[in-house]
Length: 80
Image (cartoon, rainbow, N blue to C red; front, side, top):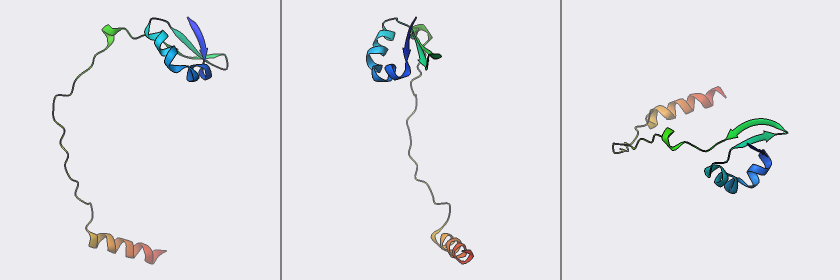
């Protein structure tokens, strides 16, 4: 397993990910200390579920009326 620093991985992310995609495994180091492994995904382990329903957007109703809000603001300003 090859090692790589976080800084080098950050600078060369795409080429390094392509190597991992092709089967290489990386041990990521932070100041010479291992912090993570980057390994290829086994396609047999991947499960993707496609959404089955339609999304519906509903308008939200205000929690307070304008009159209630004005009363709260007036009271708040009196306390200041």
